[in-house]
Amino acid sequence: MTDFLSNSWKEILTSNTIKHLLFIVITLAIASVLLIVLRKIATKIINSNADKLKVDPTNFSFLKNSLSFIIYFIALIVIFRHIPSLRSFGSALFAGAGILAAIIGFASQKAFSNIITGIFILIFKPYRVGDVIEISNGRIGTVEEITLRHTVIKDFKNERIIVPNTVISDDIIINSSITDAKIQCRVEIGISYDSDIDLAMQIMRSECEKHPLLIDNRTDEDLANEVPLVRVAVIALADFSVNLRANAWTESFTDAFQMRTDLLKSIKERFDREGIEIPFPYRTIVYKKDIEKK
Image 1 (spheres, rainbow, N blue to C red):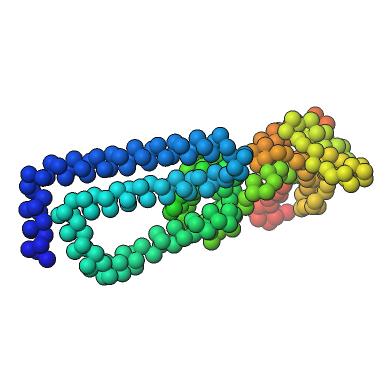
Image 2: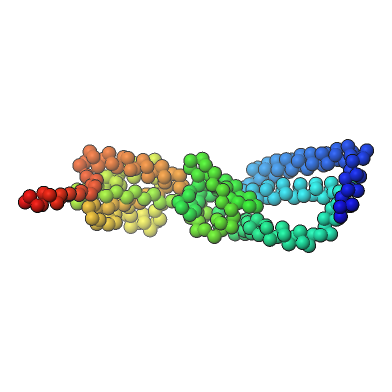
């Protein structure tokens, strides 16, 4: 094996070296240009015919990342077959491919697992590019890219959360966009037991109905039964407060978040003007020395 490698290097360091190096550079350059052209063509076709072809962007993202591997792998095969010394060296490598494959297979179990899981994600589509999802530990964001190895999620701080496909596949995913993007915005506020419950509920309903992001999600049956546009109910009689909840509908998760933050502010201001108290727990502290004096 040592003699063979020595002869191979001697053959490389001949007058044909420049010719072979030029061939390698040209082949890789052609592969790079071809990859760029194919990506641009695919992007143009999908963007211009997305509705007609009903193409899911997830499929294109996965294909785009697979295309790089395929093009460069073919380029390497062409290089090895064209240069005699590399062809011989490649044959020597493939002669011991059994042991090498076993070593690589053992070391790459997780990598192959991520690839297979990525294919399953592509087929069954628990989430797609552009979906707003929530994964473990309360991480919420928009799916930006699905690659052969991992999924990239952009959160609302503009940070990228990179999750291996096997990890996200085993996780519980809350998808706010998979079939219907509309989402219910829930605003929960506690009032004191001395406050007027009916007035507080009326204020919460009024503030919700004035919000520009509110949508009417009532069915024909709800309209016939005169179900209110915004439902407000008492959900708990807590230790020191009466807890109220207003349920309003919006077009998307982002709108629901914006609506909730706006309503918390506007309802608090209305409560202050109307004399509705938002309580907090009181504590009475008795010192032991005071008891002894008594």
